[in-house]
Length: 249
Image 1: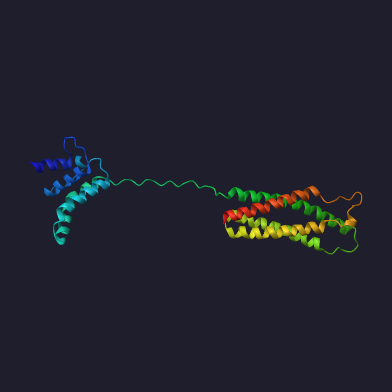
Image 2: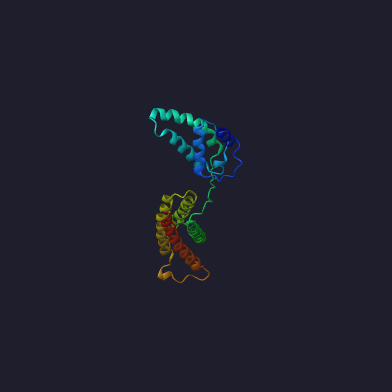
């Protein structure tokens, strides 16, 4: 009679309302082993329990039957008892893994500083290109009034070198923004210091001599405002590039 009731509980569950707990599931598993009943469904004694709780109850029941036996007999009995309770373990599916949603990519904390340095560098180069265009126009006009070609002087070398390094350094800084390679940022720092030094040399070479301070009438003087803007943006560029590189290191 008890066996019939247990079989009914194994397959369809008892009609009596049972509050399922790990202990009731454990007791059910022990009774199934004692009576050699193969569990074919989820009983009321284990209903609502998690996969881990059911596994623990089954393991306790099998251990209850085999812990006092010799190892060889215990292994054989454990294999036999596992057959009775195998479907009980499989009847409670394991929890589904929670899908890991990829966190949205957060922009780098130093990105605004890097972009600000790029903007300052571009503005500095733009003002420098304007000054270079005016200087080249004056240099070409001076050659036209001379019968012999004018040989390049120190001012020419400083100007060409200053502008060439400025464009190269700007390209290196853009490469740093694209690749994130900190080595490129430090190379840009070294170059921006050299560029600033050449800029001071160009300014010194471009200043007129005291005896030539009064320019002839009709001859335009150097664009002081553009030179001042160029110098301000150059100073800002150096500061931003150094701070951005330190922040990226």
